[in-house]
Image (cartoon, rainbow, N blue to C red; front, side):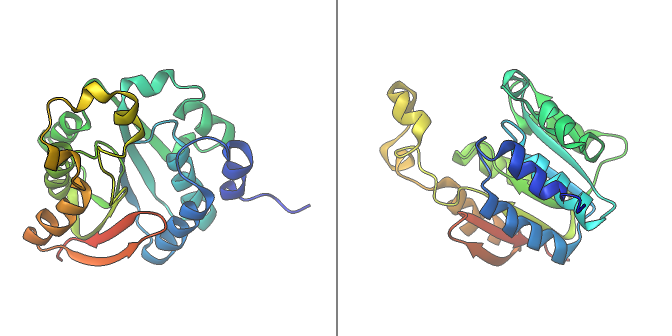
Length: 217
C-alpha cells in the first residue's frame, strides 16, 4: 500500500484551516526543493498550517532542515493550535514554535543578542503587515539571514482599508493618516528597504500575493 506523503496528509487533515492554501503550499514546495534551505525562519503562523506544510516539505524531500516559527502567545489558544497540527502529522521534530508576548520583533532581538546568533538561509514573513512592524522586522531579519539567503514576503498588496480585521474594528484606524490607511506597506518595504539593503527582487507570485527576494552574497 502506498504511503501518503506528509504534504498530502497536511492537506487531508487541515484543508479547511486558515491560512495557507494548497496551491500556495505547492509553490513553496517547488521553491524549497530548488533552493534546499536547511535553517528556516517563519514570522506569523496563526494555527500553524503553514508551519506544518514547511515541515512536511522538508520531511518529504529528505532535507536535513528545521523551522523556527514565531507568533503571539494568543496562538496557543487557537483551536487547533500549532502543537496539535504538528503532533497529528508527526512533524513536531521539524519545528520549534516560539510564542511572543507582544511582538515578534523583540524575539528577533533576543536572537540577535544571543551568544550564538542563529543564522537562517530562508525566511517566510507573514505577520504584522503595517509599515513600522514590517519595515523594522525586515531590518532585523536581515541581521539573521545568511548572505544569499531568501526572504519570502506575504500579502504584498495588503491594505488597512481592505483588511478584514480593520473593517470589523473601524475604531482601530483612528490613529492613522488616510494615506497610510490606503498604503500597501509590504510592497513599500519591497520597493524601498529591500532595495536599500541591496536585495535582489527574484520574482513575484501574484496569485499567492508573495514576493521573493535574495540577500546579497
